[in-house]
Length: 166
Image 1 (spheres, rainbow, N blue to C red):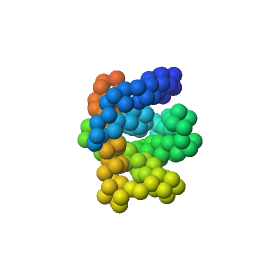
Image 2 (spheres, rainbow, N blue to C red):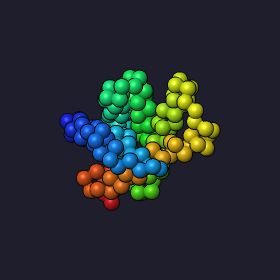
Image 3 (cartoon, rainbow, N blue to C red):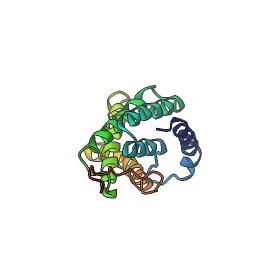
Image 4 (tube, rainbow, N blue to C red):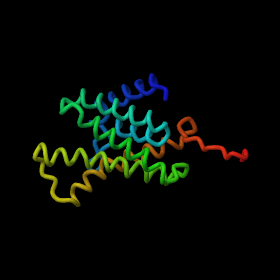
């Protein structure tokens, strides 16, 4: 993984999230740019690089959010772990497969954040259906954008060549 490029992208993402995130406020959808970067890494980067990058991105988000340090690092790390494990069993060379991997991984991380809000901060989630809707409202746009970004030739996952050269 090209770490200087990742740090530059992360800086731009955090700035976009802080500035344009407020302007692009849509009632039913939240665009989480750092989560999208974690998902793109989870779809295209080697597993160990993905997991380390997710922890780094989560830690930066934690430092800038003013909340508990380590929460987003843990949630993004779990998201990356889920993405790297899911891509072993789901065909990530098909676009729909990448969308499913990204969505399931993002939902796992969002549920961690929701459980923290409910059990440690005392937030009322309104039942399982409402909590799932809340998690999906954040996870689906990030997964969709990540899957679409992997369609770009510069980010497309490379297919392995078969041993006999086809």
